Amino acid sequence: MSEEFHEKFPDIYSCIGYFEEILRLPGGVVLFLEFKGLLCGYVSVKPRHQAKIKHTSELNMGIHSEFRGKGIGKFLLQNAVDRVQEEGIIEIIYLMVRSDNVPAISLYEKSGFEKLAVLEKDTKIGNIYLDGILMRKFTGALNSGK
Image 1 (cartoon, rainbow, N blue to C red):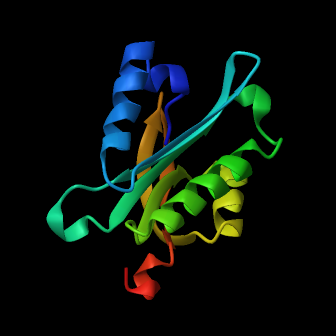
Image 2: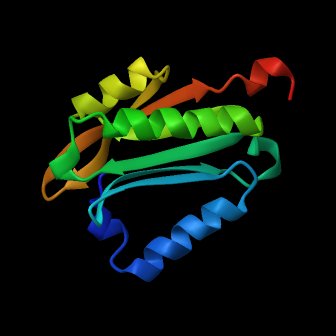
């Protein structure tokens, strides 16, 4: 939610390992968008493994600062949700977003995510506290009985 890509993945091996783990899980989705050798953005949907919440997942995405506002986030998010819906394993997608990330909140709301809760002072950057917003989207598998 508050990490830059290079902070989350200091080297290629940590990146590969993280995403390979997601892809091994039933319902896991990882998508990247690359342009001229530069990673423009990514999205992952990581299913939860605990028995009683296996029908839920956590979405994480990031867009390189040079490519924000160009529709890449919308493209990646829609394709990830489409894949989740096609597989029919995941019924609910959760995500966390910082309250100051207005463009991301708008994108998520336009894509059918709803705000569930505000976590006050959830993130601390330097000496500044920021709220986190928990959001959720039902994928349709819940209603289809899969």
